[in-house]
Image 1: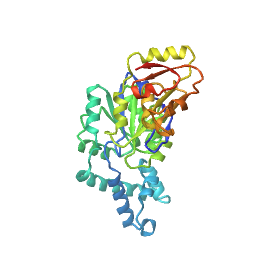
Image 2: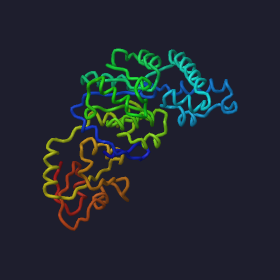
Image 3: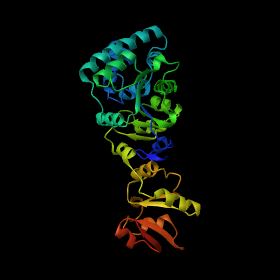
Length: 333
């Protein structure tokens, strides 16, 4: 599909509509179920400061995102202590202990998580947590969030042959659930996690919790949301086509007719709806009223869509738009 994030960057992953019937949902934990990155950042910053890392200058949030976020502890240890792996591994173990103390007091779920949980339970979907966090961290966070009885499996990257960004943890999650990648999608918040889900053959909904959207989009998620109350997620769950739309689509395709979508909706909304309805490859153009000199009820968007030298069929649902649409056979939808 082609869905734009809020910053206008597009992705090429498959539409979620192609997953029907949906079998399972896989979740990362840090930054996906909860906004835990500030706690990790604080722990790393304070402990590195204590040992004089970076000349005694506190690490920046940018350094944390580039070097630490979403990565496995073995890889972090190598980066922070390239000449002393044993020291690096001891450091990250101590840091995780500090994180667990902070999490026990401060960890909170992302907005809307409970709604998504209920939606998944009501639909009888299988679910697993798939994380690069150590098992002690993962199980603590799941317990604090009240999700111990929710997940059917908890997959730890360090217990797989390769951690994220390799696909192994997500493939192991599918295996544990006995679910097909063709009927499963992933929630992730990091570049390495999105890459892992995509490499495992599943569409990934990216959460722009802390990581920059442009970096997340480079990993090719299906689309990005801010949290589980984001309207884009609601649209992906609930949007339904009008009755008979598929018949009209086939009729148009069988006759080799040109077609465009012409709307006053923002491009991000338009492309999400088109994708959700499985029409990304149907339309040759998507014309946005706000990108023309004048939006509907002015004729500009329709004039931009086609050259009206020949009669066309126009489907519209608003009288003002129908009356000002030039040179057309109008169908009141």
